[in-house]
Length: 224
Image (spheres, rainbow, N blue to C red):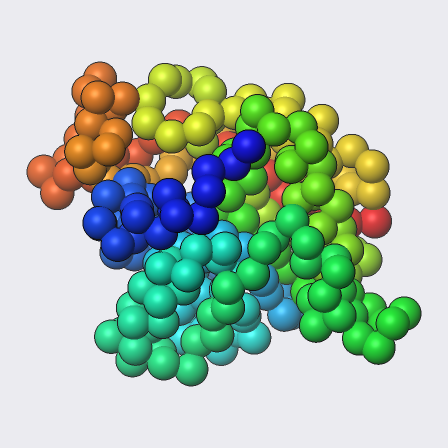
């Protein structure tokens, strides 16, 4: 099973989340600069809200969601501190978005809600949970418009270290029915070394600021 909500809440309440780096992921910033983010955008597992804040500031219609109430509270406070208080955040379960008309299209039979979905370090959480991972992919399919794009930034098993790490094969296998994986390349994911992951990152090159760039995958996946 994925970790209970209380575990995720604690990561924000105790400031132990290694993925909270105080800035958007460089790989996501480059995606936007390359013109790969278009239309209405969903940021699932938004965490501290850095990507929703970035895209809102740039003029995108974007919605950040997270199952953690503490994450959403943190994101809203973060947005206000950065002068982007109009950024939109909501507590929501990513596994059941297809059941919600405001995500999947309302009234019944209308188009799904999102042109682009930016998954930064959420998909890999389901690495050992076939049922939850399949439910997540179905949920994405229900809310992504035909021809729309899902970008997945996930930690790679090309190296050991902190966090859940997955293979490129798992990404391709998961996005088979109803999808085309158009691109899947190695990249880097930036994290910070907190006490919670220090023992897993001892062999990695850590900057003076306590951050590390870990091996990752970046996939571009088109919905049929």
